[in-house]
Length: 509
Ligand code: XMP
Image (cartoon, rainbow, N blue to C red; front, side, top):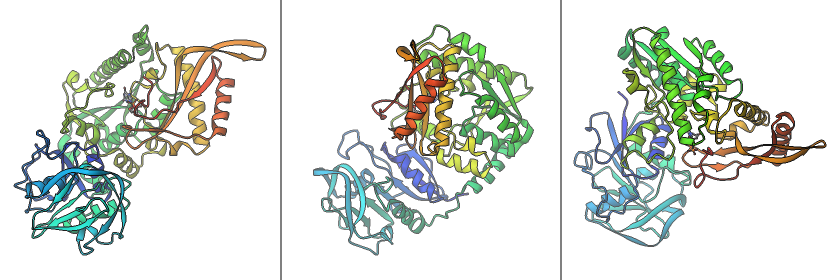
């Protein structure tokens, strides 16, 4: 069993980042809500208390039960976590008089403190809090502070309990990863053995013993998650895994054939289903984005179900669910409000009456990529930009027709190939083109044209939750715009989207 760090979540927007950083250190960790965490067993080597949007004085502020933890296991409180430990131990926490938000320089008072071993004096840290610790109990020792924050960090005498009033997990805390390393490796004594290779070995063994001789069906999308899930299952159960890859007519140009070939080359037992017509027929007359998503989702489930029924004796449905999806549904804040109904395969397990197996449910996206790399997934799939399940169905704005999809596929393909040629593809988190539901006047040769507008979008992001528009070079935009307008008859104008998320979203629908 791996050593593990337990992260108790008080609802901070950064909790997942703490987990990512700990995993970057090749130490396994799990996030659990502060009020519903599993029994502490021998595998738990230490606990981290996250930040929170609450003030410790709010009447509905989280009040965790730490009886099994504090003083018994190494414990690190981050921001709210640190304030909570100070308050419940007899200290004082007050609203800050000055803004404690953003960058600050930390001066370390106790360089012997294990947490700050090897950390530079005046290292940059990131603060984000409305309260501050003003008085500490007598058994607390201050180990670092900033100009405005006296108690930047502390430990409790006789315990392995530490508090820090800054966020080590965010990028702007320059030596944050080293501080976390000092905690998980030196204080908690965790082995750094959580690697992609160990994950693959253990997962394959687990899958073998869970699935034995059962048959499993899995929907492939061409994306990295379902592909990595398929490879893991393939290693575990070989031909007992059947993959279904549905052509809904809304994929990128030539993508269905290319990806299907890659899958076959990998030795996967994959059935490609041409269901284009069915999706287009059902989309006729629908222009509302959510109604389009529902139509595409419903048809996908039906096609998948029909195909799965052709395989005798299937017992399991495999899905490429990853950690952020799992956390969303069990977080302190509850499943977040549906802004867009993203997971259009959500209805599959209920409909099919199969047991569900999700080999990636503990991994973050970047970890999925590392595991994919370990498994030999070709780079064209491994580094593919995220692509929405409803595909071009939500990038043709308004009503979807086969002709509009064809136009968009052509423009999109010029754009994406251009990004690859100019070495821009891997610098961008996600890129794509949208066909707008308006036509504009243009002139080509001596003729007046009245044709569609295409909008190009490229964003940087780490998780799709927030995103910034990518600053494409003007020469590149000029070249692509020219190429699209000259080559794709039916489009006479190209625009570039310069909105960030929030307030905009990545997709236009
Ligand atoms: P938004 O548009 O909400 O997108 O900023 C965030 C990420 O989610 C993808 N996305 C979807 N993925 N089904 C999916 O599987 C959907 O309906 C859907 N809508 C958006 C989007 O491409 C981006 O990566």
